Length: 210
Image 1 (cartoon, one colour):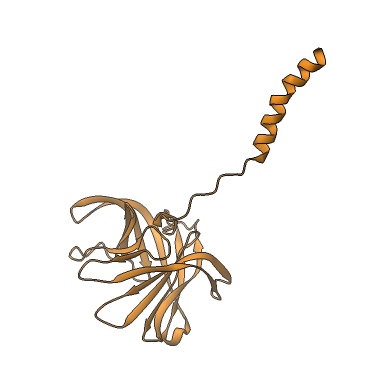
Image 2 (image 1 turned 180 degrees about the vertical axis):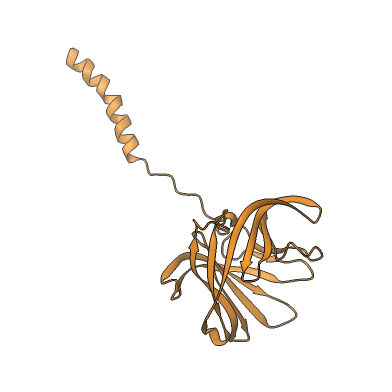
């Protein structure tokens, strides 16, 4: 009887162990919120290499550093976002998120033009949005793709490729956004000719802003 009692006691324990062992780990949530692609924090610094006509890589570089997280009034509403300083030049831009949209104000010095709507969720193939006047750009997420960068010497995986067009000219601009590095590349075309762009060389997440 004692053996039977022990066996009966062990049965539910063994069943519980087998059930736990057989459970599949939960799938990670899909990365459709634009916050996953707009990678940013205080003291981050991106170093980009400029790309010239015919997509020729130049020796010219541009750095973007994040000195602070700030509250700023944009179109009469307080928004919490990130100050971004472009070097050389020293102009300060401001980026913030509202709901499913990343907004970008190209310069905090100008107060007449509204911010761009540079990235809108869900970040997946087929998402479309139109920017406001005076920009009037049309954006479309083409899909997710891997981008090999000879400048960085690595491949950026599953980048969101965004296509921007304007109804009043024939220029097309492409942006590639990574969940690890933010914007890794942009190229502008007119017809099929490459006009200009820039590509990420590296992101320094420990850079200390002077």
